[in-house]
Amino acid sequence: MKNRVGSARGSGKRITLSFFSTRSLRLLLACLFCLPMAWVPSAQAQDAAPAQPLDDDASVLVLGRVSDDPKSHYDQLKPLLDYVVPRLAGVGIRSGRILMAKDLQQMTSYLRRGQVDWINETAGNAGLLERRGVAKAFLVTEREGATRYHSVFFVRRDSPVQTLADLAGRSVAFQNPYSTSAYYLPAARLLDEGMKLEVLLSPMDKPVPGAVGYLFARTELNITTWVHKRLVDAGVFSNLDWANPQRMPPSFAQDFRIIGATEDVPRALMLTRKGMDPKVEARLREVLMEASTDPDAGEVLRRFIGTSRFVPIADEDRRALDKLGIGVARVRAEVE
Image (cartoon, rainbow, N blue to C red):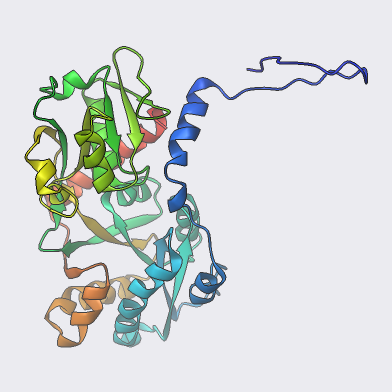
């Protein structure tokens, strides 16, 4: 809807300006907190990981990544790709390439057009890609001994908030709009509880009565700091972060208590594009699952975001992923 705010009369022309709706403006300003995470390709990153579509060559295995830091992520992916490619020679793979996407929408396009063969993604994004019908999860990634995790909501010990229902009319700090454990999963849980989520302009802003106001704090440490300093009423991130003293300082933890949690979901997953050659997919699965017992793969896995091994998807993982995909779609439709 346009709102007239002024006109120019000297020229005989009327100039009409328009404002964003309040909801759009709030969401825009909230996302400004995440600007440092935007994908801005540097010349160095473009040299390392070309973003142009690749040739349609069945002998080339393309590993993809949604990235806000192409150079750093390229350094993580390249050793794994170099390890895998020669071990797939028996199924016709002769070389490998890496293709970065600036966001999940671009990666969806790459997968749909067959320009990316396999990717590693968080559970939230994996569930959404599966719902879009462009990829299928085939392995779970284990890191630091964990294949699953969940989100925990926490408040100060002296807070009057006792349950998730008490968050109505109060504020919560998420991490960023792409986090599974610190956005998608807890936001879906709040929606399941019948709550309305409203983006806030700043920690000083207040939600409308009955709604849960939210902001993006960008890092786990910022989340704990905001709660500790009473800038927000509650924070949320994974149970693994809760147990990590670098993200939950002991001096803060003693002043906090948990008021709720979500169900477990896979921590991260390997996915292949729809329509990938079954022989290539089967061999890729075999190579990745055997890597944890291969002495030559030790450093490769360590550099791949601290991975310890790849394991098959259990039935409970599949059910959790399917449910999460529904939850993520709902968050994107009702909250964003």
